[in-house]
Image 1 (cartoon, one colour):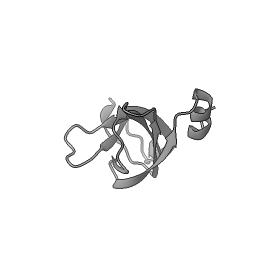
Image 2 (cartoon, rainbow, N blue to C red; image 1 turned 135 degrees about the horizontal axis):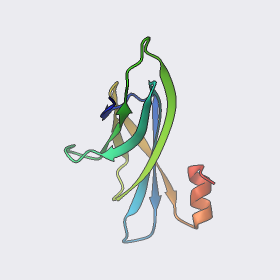
Image 3 (cartoon, one colour; image 1 turned 180 degrees about the horizontal axis):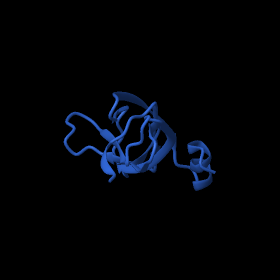
Image 4 (cartoon, rainbow, N blue to C red; image 1 turned 30 degrees about the horizontal axis):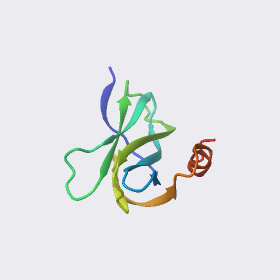
Length: 119
């Protein structure tokens, strides 16, 4: 039976898209890692209990556990609206990492997709 919880990660990136004066932009968080085989449903969730900035938890479903333990690569991205912070914290089962946030202006949807690497 699978269980839901924190997942390990190898690297994390954070980008903030400025959407205009007087309006909040949004963060794009991307995490890459290797989780135990038979893991799925990877998500990045804003940590509501973190004090002093922004923190994001890397979570997913794992199971059934196979022997011998093997891993499978994954990548997950998500966006979060909010005010700019120069750094965010990404929390996984194997570490907490402070990630410097890259900033890009919103000029057009095409330019944002190109800058985020999703076009």
